[in-house]
Image 1: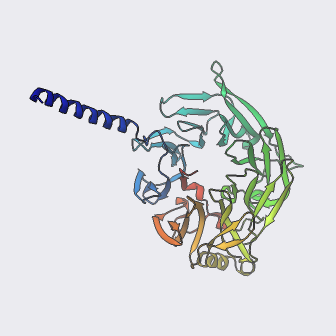
Image 2: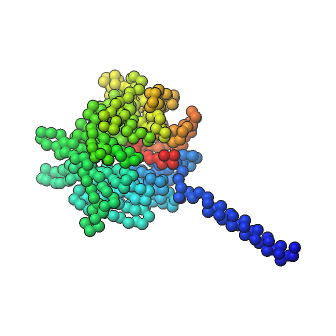
Length: 445
């Protein structure tokens, strides 16, 4: 073989190898296109952070204080959050944040690139994080309690406000449905429709102040907080209702009492007509709080399934990823102590064991998951064999702990739930407002 032919052969061989490598690279999964790694975002004294669930690597999102209500976009590419009264969005890929609006009231992601938000001004705005385009809905009403569906529909409450010589007033007109496919560019309005009407209080009657609890993943059902238009009455007990989007029917379950807290309800990811609910009136979390299953039939009749041990109170229900079990936190009821000494009851509550339990939804068999003397709550299923939960450390600080086959691993430490609490464990009558400081993106979901 001549030297020239040998060089040509070597050149062709190298070309084939390089071409094959390039083809192989082109076929490698692209992280920005496919699923992102699971992570959780949370607040600490000095800023907002997130950590990946697989390795616990912590990253600072935004330095400072007074962060609240982080909401992760649908595919995990962005984090929306409030700092003081301003809305910010953090880009996970670019690792930078931008300020979107001031005087923020409510917001939610409609898809992975678009967020809806309302301020203390009339109307609301759609914002596209890629194009930076803002599409405004302009009218005389105020909006709150946004919750997006997967059908390019968003829900919220529509509020009228007015001022007289006696002061400022507001009334909830009801829950609205906003069709994002129908926009009048001339009048700058989306198509809106009241699906559940509110009711103004009169001298003879207390009004009706419905709010959105949650929307099922398929967009078929909206779970409703059935609230009287009285903050004091609502604090001690509300009802629960369901709106069927396809049938356009609203049903209230009149004999179930609960409290108006977001983390009191969990929708089963497999059966959207099955919910876990903290049942029980009275604003104090230390008594009369039982976790139950509510199984809703197609005709909106329902049955409640009870399984808790006696003399316990529960909080933060959450279904496992496969929908077959319900996780929750429970501890000993302190009603007897509360009747004698209110302050002692809450001191005991803070220091007594709170454990994580699971119940099989088919057999109602209950199992205790954590067995120490710690204050454990907010269990979240992150895989078949793993759960994440919070543990109170004292002095207003919490840890996030991953439990794998009975072994604990601290994922994040010295978290705070509410900067307003100033070192105390709890907020309103023992309620832990977990959604105010944390959100989780789980790729397995």
